[in-house]
Length: 533
Image 1 (cartoon, rainbow, N blue to C red):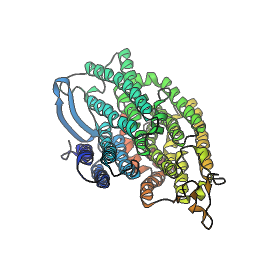
Image 2 (cartoon, one colour):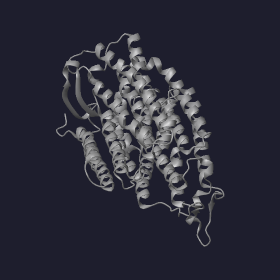
Image 3 (tube, one colour):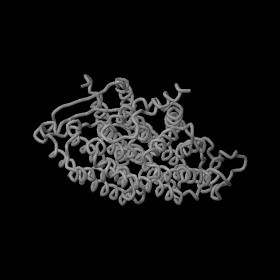
Image 4 (spheres, rainbow, N blue to C red):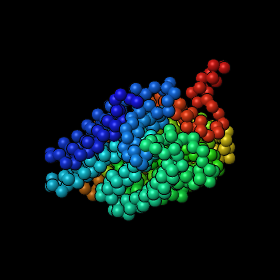
């Protein structure tokens, strides 16, 4: 056990900060600064905690914490992280301050008490969400995991339903109903797996529920209960339909945290619980899951190509990308598992960039519709540049982070699922289509008819013909939003071992419970190949 409760600190600090933001007297600007400052301090503590993580340790979970919670029902407060959970926690800690900074003007403060309370509530909810993101990845008690899993719904529901777009109530309710349906089914499976286990005060611990001798039918039913909840959260076809509505109607910061971080709970749960607790059922269900993954890759990409709403297009790309992640997980190879785990990390940064950079365009143009743009690279060349980098990351351009993870998924999937791997390669072509077509329609070509070039002004100083407001390029705040995301693309693109060295031992441990096609991690394979030359 860790002598310092790092994970509890990381979870509690944002929650405490959100209470200060929501209820402490002061101006909205001060509340925003408190929220941003809290998230930055939390990130700094998270980095210090990550430095305590030992990749050479044989223990599955590190930075462990334990306390009895409800011993009569076998529930304990147990926290710990393996390499996969650690990188996802760090991703959440990085994206939270980025989203808070990007959301600075999402809720206008009109100077009255009502708008001030509304703005404070928005930033408090965004900050409180960080608590549940840390908790859900760090929980090593199944029931505690379920508590965090369901608690995430509360701030997201209000962030969409209160602060979203015109159809926010419909989108929030649809998100809630899908998530609750999956969560309630999983609750039945959580209770059932406890009854099948050894019981006692620590009966919900992952370590005690691993390796149970279950009847095949029982194991398959339990697997189905967990997998359905994770498939909804991921999201996978056909239980994905809540995502486009939620991502489109939510504010950009909410959509970023929802798709970039919270949806990873689905694929993370498949690794942590489906493979580890129900290995036999996982192997039994593999043909079905692989088929759903391939369908998600192709279906999500095809729908993305046909979208005219920029935010909805980005949401459908995530359906396709999550199909890749699930494909790598259920390939049952070390390379595929490492690629999927890395993909979760890279997709979080890539999706954040797409949503937030697109929101910068929408803020200037006042429209999410792609046909309302055109020639925008002459209006805001700096914004066009970072949007191009985000688009290239979305289509997995070599040299950027997504390429490494996607390549590992393909390489790891082909040995065990060659047909699925070949079919999924179509996703590469489709990704190029939906990303490049979006960029072409938004950024290139003639200027929009609704924009007039003022006499004596250079192109980048175009004005809106209606209001005459100067359309400025990137502000300092927007540059600060973009910088860490683009840095993540480049660092993880050129030096993926920074994350893979942490992820690989956790992948090996998770796959040790199922039949795998290979036993050496990607880094070891590369080293062996290099030494043989």
